[in-house]
Length: 428
Image (cartoon, rainbow, N blue to C red; front, side, top):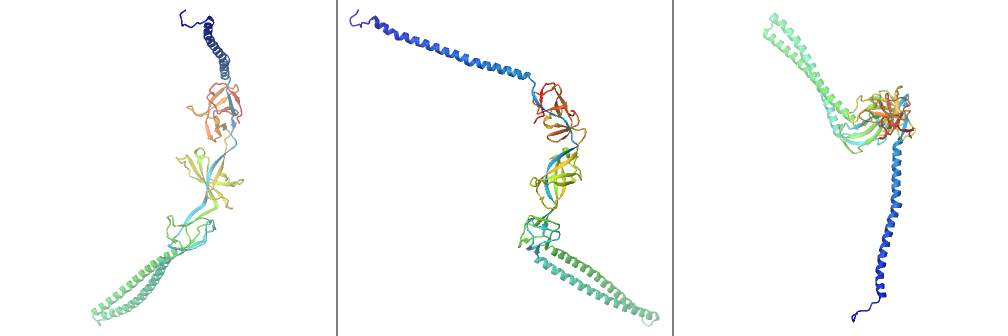
């Protein structure tokens, strides 16, 4: 042993090695514990998951083997009559604006919004100062024409008197000329004077004729102005209700039949109403003049108003594929108002051979309209049908199905030809 080296006993060496052995044993134990946890996770986690997947797969296979459940409804016979309900717009039987026919200022307004008026009732008065001046001038012109005519008539009387005198004179001078008492020159002068008197009578008669025509023209102008003056009193053209008023006392009124500010009143006759209904192309041929219908307004619950088809356009609008029908209904109490929204119910006779199929059963494809019929053996057969009328919830058909056949409603992709199904119905 060298001097200075530490003396290490055997016991100390063993003590130095012991911590290393203990560290290796701890790592090994930790590894074994981790492996045990993994094994437990596999046993208790993966195996149940695999079991569930196998169960789901088995259930799916079982479901695929089981016939799909479908809702069915029975085909039924079409009723003796069918109904069609369509929206309509209520309008007054007669409605129109009232314009001023004379220029002036409104001095009286006797009606207002909502007033009921009768035909010929005075609604307003217009002061017409310019028209009054024209009327005075026209009356003076008529008086002047009458005076001129009287002068022409007096001139005709004088001309006739002169003509008679000239006739007597020429006859006398003619006899004297024949006897040679006077010269032929003097006789010719008397004949010329007679011819002049005849021309004067003709001229006087022409003046009278012209005076008569002038008087007639003056009187016509006077009557026209008097007629315009009568328009200063605005009256109702028919019985109705005032729905609009655009002018008040003092407003300047211009004669005319157009323009936004020239309409004085608007009147509507509501004792009888019109209903405008757009009938779809499918039913256009069924709606005819004289056909009866029922009118209902939501705000007037419990009241049903009889209506009659007064006329139709007789053609289908290419843009909307509808035909306009105009109905009329009496409205003696005035409960129906212009502009109301209404429901019009038409009734049509049904066909004894027609059948009704639920609208939800319709299938559209390259083969045309079809339905899936579930037979007594629960096997599906696809049937082509011919649709007579589409009522929305139901289809009226005349071929492809029979009364009592069970058709699949709301069919899915699993419903195909010769597929077995489990029918349930009728669907609710």
